[in-house]
Length: 151
Image (cartoon, rainbow, N blue to C red; front, side, top):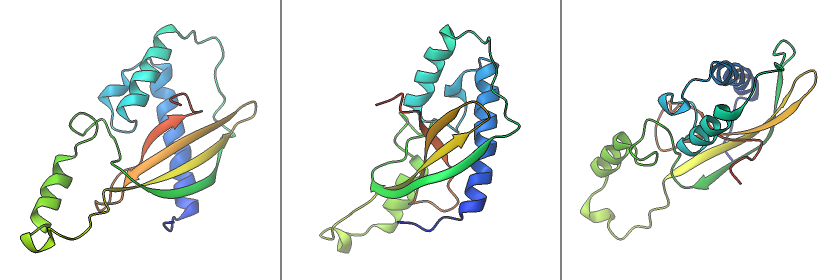
């Protein structure tokens, strides 16, 4: 389990919720931004095509609380990666670090961290899953699931 600055992450998670909500309300293409995964972007775009904006969510009292955090083996998918999975910068870095002497070592990576966040507003609850690649320094968080619509 990775250490996570809970207060900073929760503040950023609130800002991320507001950003994604505004993007959704404007019916903009989620594949053109880097803060959602390709699968989630396609799902949101599909839902947004048929949604009717009768009621709005009040974001004034929005609160975020981390429910759980874990590390798993696998690529963190983002819209700025090749096919959503292959991060060319990470491939170059890993190729540069490898040598013939490491050929027999067990490679465990790539690793990603996931964080499940509960959002509460005046009249609704949402659960979002955030992820980031742990193999790169200063990697950005992306939303990988909202209310488990991808399961």
